[in-house]
Amino acid sequence: MRLCADVGGSFVDIAAFDDAGAIGWRRKVPTPVDDWAAFVAVFADVLAVVACERVSIATAGLVDPVSGIVTSANIRCIDGRRLADELARVLAVPVRVVNDADAFVLAEAARGVAMGHERVFGIILGTGVGGGLVERGRIVGGAGGIGGEWGHGQVVHDSPIAPGTNPVFACGCGLKGCLDTIGSARGLERLHRFLHGIAADSFAIAGDAAAGKRRAVATVDYWCDLVGGPLAMLLHAVSATIVPVGGGLANAPALIAALDARVRANLLIPAAIPVVVPGRLGDDAGLIGALVAGG
Image 1 (cartoon, helix red, strand yellow):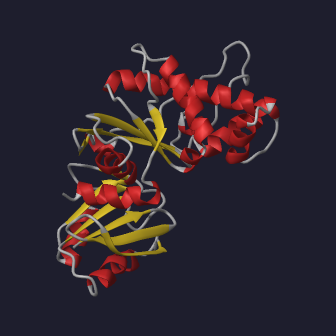
Image 2 (image 1 turned 60 degrees about the horizontal axis):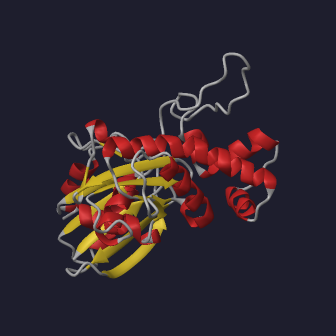
Image 3 (image 1 turned 90 degrees about the vertical axis):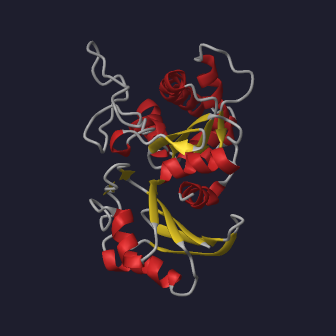
């Protein structure tokens, strides 16, 4: 048995997989974001009753592939720790830790919508914008574990002639105009408010656009321009052939189809079939990605 966990800012989804890769035991508990001892206990308590020979974890935050140090703003008790090494010493079993976006892409490449593709660039469109690159079943982590993180770096600039006419928003990373500020669910809402002065939920905006409502159609069209161009450039750079989408906006199929159409319109080599597609594994993706990463 292998113990796998998907650690988010609110909950830890934890499950034991049998040797065939099927879930035999599973539960979800609140994430002890500020309590290291309680965090360790989440795993120790399970291992006390379910015999597992190794632990694999997908977690929010960057995971340096060399040092193993985790950088996590939301889960403060693991921030700055060599998480795999520290847990392995306490739990007395081998531990592997990967970024949750990387785990999502790895899962979709191994068991989901991206099966059979050699190079997969997966994206997360949820509270923020994240991503990961998998090549031949392996995570391309990059220096500092930042590989695949396409949400940061300025892509929207203000007009030097008419300041304030472009949607340049401050980003939590300290920059302005990052894709994270417009491409996420909150970004779609921010963009709608900027264009029309109307506060609306991202799913309401996507639904209204699918129904042909003029203001929502304009917002989604602009959103597709702002997100689709950079995504097409990334696909050119990394030569990925499919983009599975995770996060909340993956549950808005018409929105993802519109993004796919805009991305394909920007590709130098035309794609006859959809490239940007919702992931298939849903809430199981993080656990399955952790399992695959653990070997």
